[in-house]
Length: 65
Image (cartoon, rainbow, N blue to C red; front, top):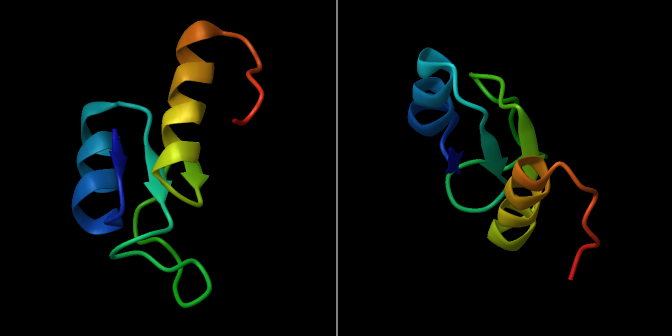
């Protein structure tokens, strides 16, 4: 699950046992708050979040574009 809201996106992923990526755009700002629900990963933007997901699925370390 990729999302920017710890209270809904990350909480839902945690509740179902899914891995999650908290994106630092939109609702969540890492410098201003601590996530209320802990994600598996954090990413600065959607590009990095998708990269992390693909890397995890492939089992390989992929270079960032």
